[in-house]
Image 1 (cartoon, rainbow, N blue to C red):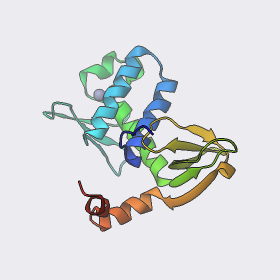
Image 2: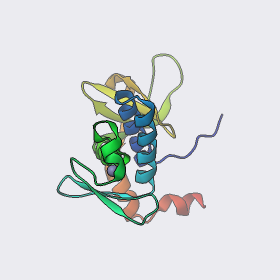
Image 3: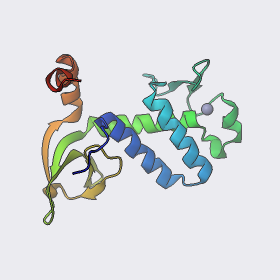
Image 4: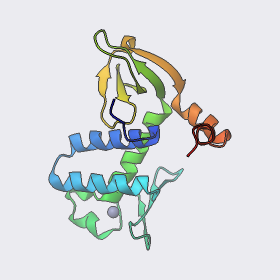
Length: 171
Ligand SMILES: [Zn+2]
């Protein structure tokens, strides 16, 4: 059995959301900006505001950009349709939050083959399953899934427990 990199459901949702964006904006320039947007999010540089806008700290941490429909960074004017990494980071984080709000810990039980653990969320009339520790998943029928706890609720409980997993598993 190969060991998987540990990705939290949040990281999985962010990376999955980035894959969706890359499928839609597939030029090399967009792909590179999406990659940088993911780095900004995972570094905690992106703050979504109640207004629906976002503040994004630059990678160097010296400045911050306010992102609404536009962005004040130098790249905004150059990027195709103004798709700078800051605007991508806002869109990807928003999408990741929407995924997490409706995501469940799940067991995928195919008709053939082994069961797999991961997270699942409704996507249109289908479900999307992402195996534990991975970024890419696949659409599946809900009948193939056994849903466990809601990810957002479990994370809230987890925070309330003061990182019980670390205590139980050691570090
Ligand atoms: Zn920008």
